[in-house]
Length: 158
Image (cartoon, rainbow, N blue to C red; front, top):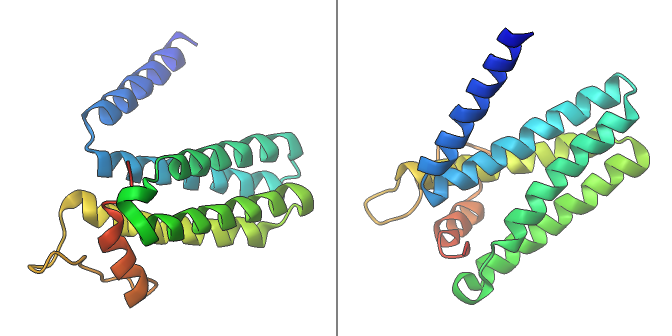
Protein backbone atom coordinates (compact mmCIF):
# COMPACT_ATOMS: atom_id res chain seq x y z
CA UNK A 1 0.00 0.00 0.00
CA UNK A 2 2.78 2.43 0.93
CA UNK A 3 4.59 1.58 -2.32
CA UNK A 4 1.44 2.45 -4.33
CA UNK A 5 1.17 5.76 -2.47
CA UNK A 6 4.80 6.56 -3.28
CA UNK A 7 4.25 5.78 -6.97
CA UNK A 8 1.16 7.99 -7.08
CA UNK A 9 2.99 10.84 -5.36
CA UNK A 10 5.95 10.49 -7.73
CA UNK A 11 3.62 10.61 -10.74
CA UNK A 12 1.81 13.64 -9.31
CA UNK A 13 5.08 15.45 -8.61
CA UNK A 14 6.34 14.69 -12.13
CA UNK A 15 3.14 16.03 -13.69
CA UNK A 16 3.26 19.18 -11.56
CA UNK A 17 6.89 19.79 -12.60
CA UNK A 18 6.02 19.15 -16.25
CA UNK A 19 3.18 21.69 -16.09
CA UNK A 20 5.21 24.32 -14.22
CA UNK A 21 8.13 24.17 -16.68
CA UNK A 22 6.01 23.94 -19.85
CA UNK A 23 5.69 26.79 -22.31
CA UNK A 24 2.17 28.13 -22.96
CA UNK A 25 1.96 26.02 -26.15
CA UNK A 26 3.11 22.92 -24.30
CA UNK A 27 0.46 23.54 -21.63
CA UNK A 28 -2.21 23.59 -24.33
CA UNK A 29 -0.89 20.25 -25.63
CA UNK A 30 -1.07 18.86 -22.07
CA UNK A 31 -4.68 20.04 -21.82
CA UNK A 32 -5.55 18.28 -25.08
CA UNK A 33 -3.77 15.15 -23.77
CA UNK A 34 -5.89 15.28 -20.62
CA UNK A 35 -9.16 15.69 -22.51
CA UNK A 36 -8.26 12.83 -24.85
CA UNK A 37 -7.28 10.62 -21.91
CA UNK A 38 -10.61 11.30 -20.15
CA UNK A 39 -12.53 10.58 -23.35
CA UNK A 40 -10.70 7.29 -23.84
CA UNK A 41 -11.82 6.38 -20.31
CA UNK A 42 -15.35 7.55 -21.18
CA UNK A 43 -15.37 5.19 -24.15
CA UNK A 44 -14.16 2.31 -21.97
CA UNK A 45 -16.82 3.16 -19.38
CA UNK A 46 -19.56 3.03 -22.05
CA UNK A 47 -18.33 -0.35 -23.26
CA UNK A 48 -18.30 -1.69 -19.69
CA UNK A 49 -21.64 -0.16 -18.68
CA UNK A 50 -20.10 2.08 -16.01
CA UNK A 51 -22.52 5.00 -16.27
CA UNK A 52 -21.30 7.00 -13.26
CA UNK A 53 -17.64 6.74 -14.31
CA UNK A 54 -18.63 7.60 -17.90
CA UNK A 55 -20.40 10.71 -16.66
CA UNK A 56 -17.45 11.79 -14.48
CA UNK A 57 -14.81 11.25 -17.18
CA UNK A 58 -16.95 12.89 -19.85
CA UNK A 59 -17.46 15.87 -17.51
CA UNK A 60 -13.71 16.18 -16.93
CA UNK A 61 -13.09 16.24 -20.69
CA UNK A 62 -15.83 18.87 -21.05
CA UNK A 63 -14.28 20.94 -18.27
CA UNK A 64 -10.96 20.97 -20.12
CA UNK A 65 -12.62 22.00 -23.40
CA UNK A 66 -14.54 24.72 -21.54
CA UNK A 67 -11.28 25.96 -20.03
CA UNK A 68 -9.59 26.01 -23.46
CA UNK A 69 -12.55 28.01 -24.76
CA UNK A 70 -12.27 30.47 -21.86
CA UNK A 71 -8.63 31.21 -22.77
CA UNK A 72 -9.49 32.43 -26.26
CA UNK A 73 -8.66 36.07 -26.85
CA UNK A 74 -11.13 37.19 -29.50
CA UNK A 75 -9.59 40.65 -29.69
CA UNK A 76 -6.13 39.35 -30.63
CA UNK A 77 -7.27 36.13 -32.27
CA UNK A 78 -10.11 37.59 -34.30
CA UNK A 79 -11.70 35.18 -36.74
CA UNK A 80 -9.49 32.27 -35.69
CA UNK A 81 -10.53 32.62 -32.04
CA UNK A 82 -14.17 32.74 -33.12
CA UNK A 83 -13.72 29.58 -35.21
CA UNK A 84 -12.02 27.81 -32.31
CA UNK A 85 -14.87 28.87 -30.02
CA UNK A 86 -17.44 27.40 -32.43
CA UNK A 87 -15.32 24.25 -32.71
CA UNK A 88 -15.18 23.91 -28.91
CA UNK A 89 -18.93 24.54 -28.64
CA UNK A 90 -19.53 21.80 -31.22
CA UNK A 91 -17.38 19.39 -29.19
CA UNK A 92 -19.25 20.28 -26.00
CA UNK A 93 -22.55 19.60 -27.81
CA UNK A 94 -21.22 16.19 -28.87
CA UNK A 95 -20.24 15.46 -25.26
CA UNK A 96 -23.86 16.13 -24.30
CA UNK A 97 -24.79 13.38 -26.80
CA UNK A 98 -22.47 11.07 -24.89
CA UNK A 99 -24.38 11.69 -21.67
CA UNK A 100 -27.83 11.64 -23.23
CA UNK A 101 -27.39 8.69 -25.61
CA UNK A 102 -24.28 6.82 -24.39
CA UNK A 103 -22.97 7.63 -27.89
CA UNK A 104 -19.52 6.12 -28.60
CA UNK A 105 -19.51 7.73 -32.07
CA UNK A 106 -19.74 11.15 -30.41
CA UNK A 107 -16.76 10.25 -28.19
CA UNK A 108 -14.76 9.17 -31.25
CA UNK A 109 -15.74 12.35 -33.10
CA UNK A 110 -14.49 14.60 -30.30
CA UNK A 111 -11.32 12.54 -29.78
CA UNK A 112 -10.52 12.88 -33.49
CA UNK A 113 -11.01 16.64 -33.44
CA UNK A 114 -8.93 17.02 -30.27
CA UNK A 115 -6.13 14.94 -31.80
CA UNK A 116 -6.10 17.16 -34.89
CA UNK A 117 -5.87 20.31 -32.77
CA UNK A 118 -3.28 18.69 -30.50
CA UNK A 119 -1.10 17.82 -33.49
CA UNK A 120 -1.07 21.44 -34.63
CA UNK A 121 -0.38 22.82 -31.18
CA UNK A 122 2.41 20.31 -30.63
CA UNK A 123 4.10 21.60 -33.76
CA UNK A 124 3.62 25.20 -32.62
CA UNK A 125 5.03 24.35 -29.18
CA UNK A 126 8.06 22.62 -30.71
CA UNK A 127 8.63 25.47 -33.13
CA UNK A 128 8.11 23.25 -36.17
CA UNK A 129 7.44 26.06 -38.54
CA UNK A 130 8.42 26.63 -42.16
CA UNK A 131 10.76 29.48 -43.07
CA UNK A 132 7.73 31.66 -43.86
CA UNK A 133 6.34 31.06 -40.35
CA UNK A 134 3.61 28.68 -41.49
CA UNK A 135 3.05 25.39 -39.71
CA UNK A 136 4.83 22.25 -40.91
CA UNK A 137 2.02 19.78 -41.54
CA UNK A 138 2.51 16.09 -42.25
CA UNK A 139 -0.88 14.86 -41.04
CA UNK A 140 -3.29 14.24 -43.90
CA UNK A 141 -6.22 14.93 -41.54
CA UNK A 142 -5.24 18.60 -41.36
CA UNK A 143 -6.59 20.52 -44.33
CA UNK A 144 -5.00 23.66 -45.76
CA UNK A 145 -7.70 25.72 -44.03
CA UNK A 146 -6.98 24.06 -40.68
CA UNK A 147 -3.24 24.62 -41.24
CA UNK A 148 -3.85 28.30 -41.93
CA UNK A 149 -6.11 28.61 -38.89
CA UNK A 150 -3.53 26.92 -36.66
CA UNK A 151 -0.84 29.28 -37.95
CA UNK A 152 -3.05 32.20 -36.93
CA UNK A 153 -4.23 30.60 -33.69
CA UNK A 154 -0.98 31.35 -31.88
CA UNK A 155 -2.54 34.81 -31.36
CA UNK A 156 -5.97 33.48 -30.42
CA UNK A 157 -5.04 32.12 -26.98
CA UNK A 158 -4.73 34.62 -24.14
